[in-house]
Image (cartoon, rainbow, N blue to C red; front, top):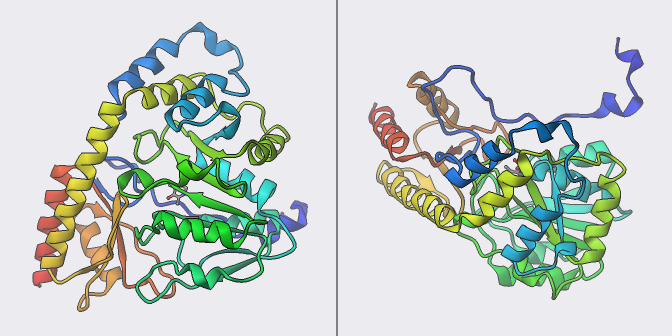
Length: 353
Ligand SMILES: *Cc1c(COP(=O)(O)O)cnc(C)c1O
């Protein structure tokens, strides 16, 4: 029945998210969710909002949330854009800021949603290979482009680009927007948010899904100078007036108000990550330096797909990408201490065989 489809639909290759299995008691280390629940203050804020007022539309501009994010990052509210998960924020950025005659540049190994948005919005793009150490070399970006986007820390490698190198890109292309997708920045990188007032071409995108344990509530945001935010607002208001609902808005505000909980949970994840890295290294794995809540590792004597299958047989799921250059790596989300101990135990058994 696909004769009914709009022509572009035939050409789309949609993004495939990591699986969300229905069965419980799996050690689920495949989609970079936070192993700790949201702050108790977030749950209280949702409970307080769970009332008759749900019959009313939410604030279309989520002003209170924008102000909370602006305060947190020492910016003005008109330098903040919010959306239904950072995926939606990114989608609007592709359409509002990154679609030009010259190609958009992004790394060959990076978030696999980027080429999907290019397909949806018919944006020409060029993938720039990471170097042999799986790092971004900013000198490779000295070419004509309509924009640049990359995750920092990068996904799925976990490697972080120092802020000085981000600045080099911004200076190299003053007439193109550089989008820094900071989904994992709170686990070890230095945010480019502090550069917003210096660079008219910088857009920083963050999410509450990873470091603030709210993947289920769908809140993401962008930070940039007001002219960039206005472009995003124009696209958003041509698409959906109410991307954030009456439960999501207070939940997100409460998440920014509980700094202690945020610091504690990020700290625990970083400590567990370092523990996992030393264990896997002792088993002979090569682990890329990670500034994220996941690690990217390969073993010289064990095939990655077989390792993933062996883990699965022990009720542990991790992510394996059947893609050029990275098909011998596993991307493993950092779990809690119990999950991490189980992973280390099972991995030791598999590798010993
Ligand atoms: C998880 C992730 C996102 C999307 O996060 P949501 O806010 O949950 O939509 C965006 N970019 C990267 C690189 C991610 O890993």
